[in-house]
Length: 121
Image 1 (cartoon, one colour):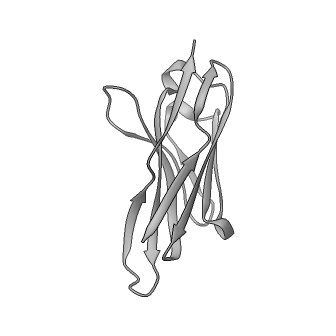
Image 2: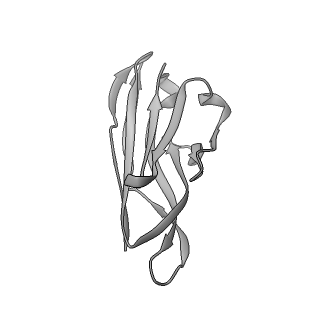
């Protein structure tokens, strides 16, 4: 089995910063892309940022220049540094990882349980 555990969410004022972390563990042979999604109340889940195992990052337009995604491959951990936060960044943030399992070599996406981010105006 594979588990993703997120941490770092919370309440912050507009203009502030938060750093999210997500650690993957379990029957992992390798991890390709890791990413962060968010879901605001009443809205669909959207991709915020993703990063390949080689470090190539991709961002949704609304967070470019404010958020930075990074990863530590040795620790199977992905981070999301969020600066200049805005009320519209409020939502539940989920991490995801494309994992190749040990032994079976089956590839599938796994999701964390989500961490709440609230940005007050």
